[in-house]
Length: 140
Image (cartoon, rainbow, N blue to C red; front, side, top):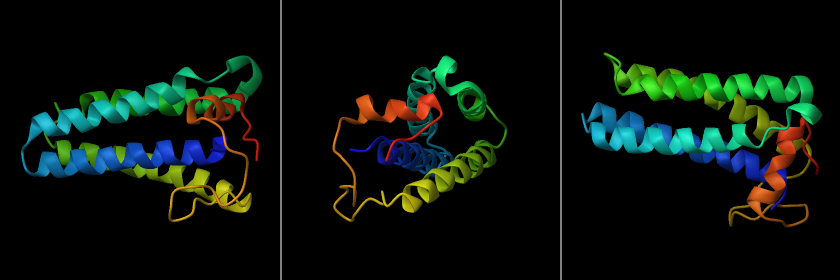
């Protein structure tokens, strides 16, 4: 899987968990809310952990700040007076970045097909190739 597609899918997966967390909070099922928030934090932590600050410089620093800000916000959502609103705030922020990555993927012809395979590009593992985003570049 091309790294760009992997990054897009990780963002989409994090958003899926946030939407499920929001629904759980609406239903006052805070155990499920916490479970989905925890999974979102794991995805964001994984993306943060592969950033290469030496190679990525400003882009990597910006992504690190973004990921860590969302991780902090997500970590406190369950304890907020209105966890639904707190979850919505994180969803809005992550959705903006996800759309940006999706646009980049579309511009490079890397739009996933309905079967989940990329329309173009070489295949590789998600972990191995998604690290390219950490270097401030995505290889097509």
